[in-house]
Figure 1: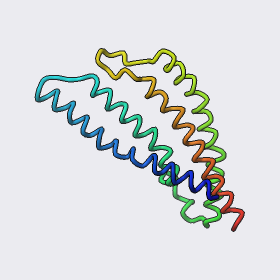
Figure 2 (figure 1 turned 60 degrees about the vertical axis):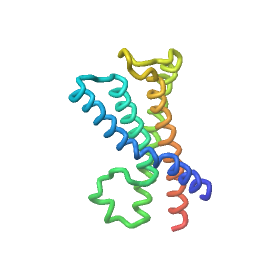
Figure 3 (figure 1 turned 120 degrees about the horizontal axis):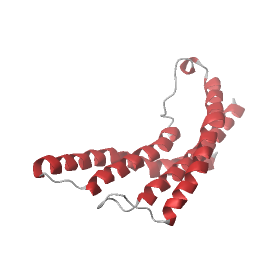
Figure 4 (figure 1 turned 180 degrees about the vertical axis):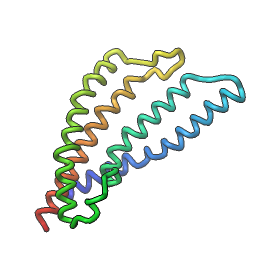
Length: 164
């Protein structure tokens, strides 16, 4: 149990700072708007940077939400269940949905990211961010993080169920 808690703590320390990307996105968007309307200028690079920050924010926010148990669930019945039954529901959700989804995501996104790395795929736009391969690498990284966090949470739920 100690190693899963250490994994959760390390993951939290690594993922939490990415929440600040929301403020970065607002700043970048404001910059694009000011450039366009005050100076009649625009830059594709800044516009694509907003897209990259958006992707980073959400793709790393998903594992963080699962780690902190902040994800959305339909709470019509769940809140009325005992703690043991809530643990059973969570464990079944991890085993039946979360882990298979992360496996599929990893299976489908890895070749996509690898092919992008092989050609060092860049932006189609002149002056765009020349690193689409980095953005596409987030997909398998997110899938792997979801799987590892799902396994960690499942193990913790099993330990809780065995103790009760």
